[in-house]
Amino acid sequence: MRPYLHLALLGLLIGGLLGPWRAAQAQPAGAAVITEPLPGATVSGVVALLGTAADPQFQRYELAFSYDPDPTGTWFSLQDPVTVPMPAGLLGRWDTTNISDGLYVLRLRVYTSDRLYTETLVRGVRVQNSAPTSQPPLSPTATVPGLPTGPDLTAAQTPPTATAPLIALPPAPTARPTPDSAGGFEQGRPAEPGPSTQALRAAFNAGVQLTVIAFVLLGAYLALRAAAQAIGQRLRRR
Image (tube, rainbow, N blue to C red; front, side, top):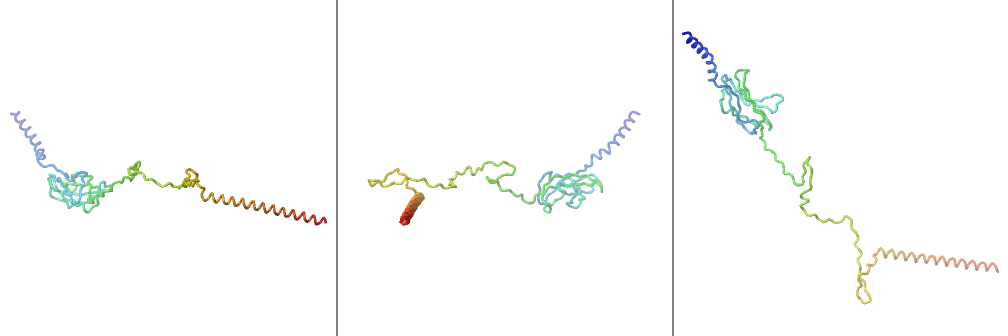
């Protein structure tokens, strides 16, 4: 009988050890999970926060949000603490119309006592309530800073237009027809000199004439002077 007694005592010992472990396994495990929105999501307006907030020793859960990143560790409560566990469903609502656009982080805390809690964070949630501004397309002639500029495509597509020379040259002299002895016109004679050449020639001729007249008057004066001196000498001799 002793071997059976030992086996019975061993069975009671094993049952006593496994009883609390089975009881712990039968109770639901605590959880603090946000399933929506996910990290990196873009939200706007009033956002429904879905997830799980439960624990065998559940006391309450709290929802809060902060800037991402948040160097000061400042958190803003989304709602009053909830004292009813939520196995899976709507945890609360987040009104993003009262905050500025940007990146935020969400926090869920499931408290099992005044100091003990389970926490989960959802980072990188972007709030975008204002419509993004669209930039106008770049024109073909626009340049982007930091990029090399190439040839102007619009200028290459348009044909070049002729431009007037900056310095106007005088027209080349053309041969003018002159009447010949037969009453016709001779071809190939050089053109008559222009008004400027005629004026120079006339001035030169007038200068020559004045010079000749001056020499003639000077010669006449010298001749009259010599004659007067000769007459004076004759009178003195007499």
